Length: 95
Image (tube, rainbow, N blue to C red; front, side, top):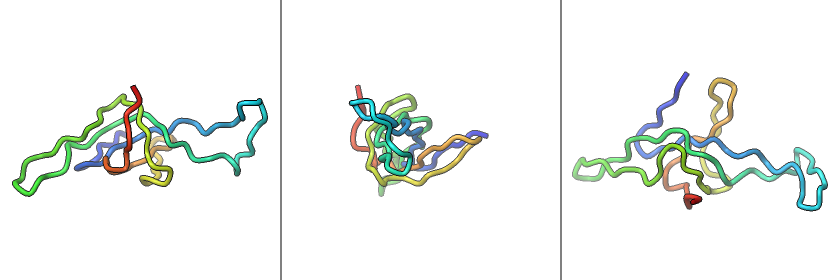
């Protein structure tokens, strides 16, 4: 199954949560922080302006992005976890 976001929505595959500290200690799964970085999988066409023209989204599929810790809605597609969020919830593109 494929998923195509609508309007200014973006589908993001979150990076895996950190499982080890820098010193090598393992972090319990209930203590791991939610990732704030992921890869854009699909992008909607953009929202419409008042005059009816489309305003394109600033990111494209394949971009690695930084987003808000609690941004987006978790969705599961073909057993994989994704986040579906508005483009406004994305703060930066990692270059």
